Image 1 (cartoon, one colour):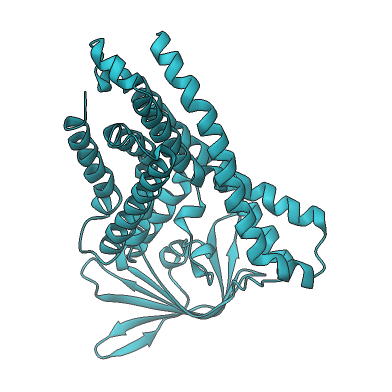
Image 2: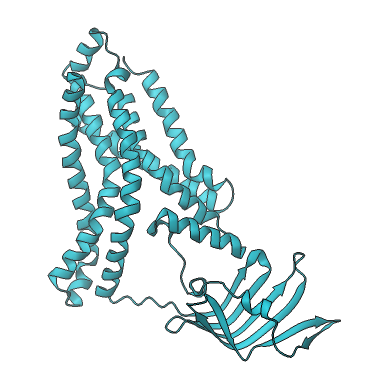
Length: 359
């Protein structure tokens, strides 16, 4: 137990200091990128500080993996350089046994990082983006022209000339209804459709129904109620915007992906980003494992080597995840493998490094 306490006394101060440093650097980089526009738009100091406050949880989320990697790598390398690790080996304590508590704590941190993102990062980052866009005078136009939406696995197709966000209306709306074999059953037209939040359905103004007859379309008197009742596709899908999976909670991301599936739209990229929400926090476990495996590679320039290994491992992991996510987006690999294959690969590398490290 004393060894564990001694180890954590070395790691925790380094971790906290490094975490604050990297989080501050990320926040300042965002500030300096936009500082000229802030001043040009005469933004108040209070508003600029609020942007930094809202961005802080995101910067800590980014900084945690780098901070834990550096603190663990530096602490262990320094102990090795001072012959403390060698003394442990001589006492019959293996490297894995000595560092096992760090690995256990890192698994708890994986769960904590996921909860932290879901509960705090997403909400505050959305506030940051909204306030920053206001200060930078960026206009987010959600109106949309020539909208086509596929719903109910291709059985219902909406085609609207224009969607207006302010009053949630569709203009020049055609709705195609098809059977299980994708054969046309009917077409309903309306010059104006209004979204009803109470009934969660589109209310059509003076609708006209057409049905196929031979090689032509026949105009019906009135519209069948079954067709009107099935116009339940949410107004949100008609907006000129896509949901950023990274900017929403896991629950909201899952609902959006289910909506894309229902609409028959591509969802590989969104699904891989959803899986990434669960896989990315495991970077904490991986970097701790890597730092343990790299312990004792050198006695000289401990700080320099720790920084180099910290940066190299982080870059390699991020690049490999970027590559696999691109492969998943284009369907070369599954969405699950796009998010989890870097985690699996680096875990294997860590095990190999530990296997051949000095123990």
